[in-house]
Length: 414
Image (tube, rainbow, N blue to C red):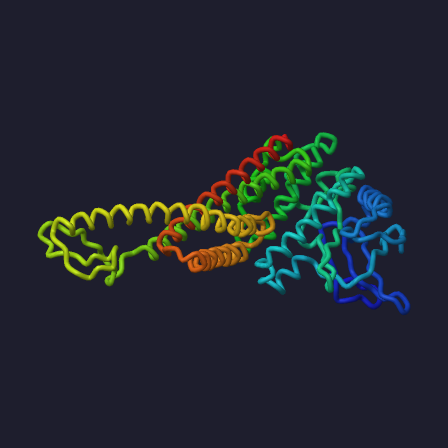
């Protein structure tokens, strides 16, 4: 609406029932809301607007635009002064900044502030019922949410006089008498439509998809009954998403480990093969006694058997050394790396952030394996295999703990 009053500001908000705009009053600019001219002569709509103003004066929440004094209460015009600040509708902001929707953290913040505002209204026994993007303002500097134009007071007006319903209004508001309407479920319908709008140019996150589908169902029994139920459902879906992400990345990390191990242990063209001497062999060097003379075939076989026994004993000592020294130290240093990869903060972060932390963790573990291999003069192929087994064990242990923790939390919430 372009109001014809003196000094009208370029910013205005037009809804079905209320017009809001800035005007100059003396040396000051004020933000004004008034009943749409179509309803300015309807006594029921005038009473409803007065009721909204009277209730709104008691509201004190950072995400609801504050009410000021009445400016006019004439028979043809009722207007109220509102909190003054630099504002823009969410609808206009997203039209001017379409790339904003990829900023997941900020989108979730805006949604969270809208939910906080309606929770506050519900705690006082009031409902908004029309979470249209034009009824959600943003402070230009901070993008703080400011809710405006609640619909609750106008439900007492004749249904035939109400404006045509839109997708952000629950259908039962027009289909049932006011006293038969479950206002909280109607609010959740509007909230569900608003969530769909927020993600209309991107992909609706998994944690919202099934919950929002239920919220916007025409069957009231499928909707969450309260805002607390909605938040609990979202939290459960969020935890499920977390577990799916854990399992997916756990499998990816294990696959990476086995792939690295396969690369590390692939035979080389210049690999040395030890050949067991036979009776036909001309003889072997007596390396045990340091004797460089040649021996008979029988002596050669005896020496070969003795060398084999020594080799087996050395292998057994070597394996024990790997298990006792490498395994313990690698495990000790791998635990905090695995814990960091699967921390709640990292799991709740964006996928690119989680991926980066995971890859950094795997690189760190590779460096630990190489460092310990050189420190204890161990075989790199064997330590690679040991590292893979330890990482697999720790990852599975972490996944099991997270799944158990979620199950316990779900039991508590139920």
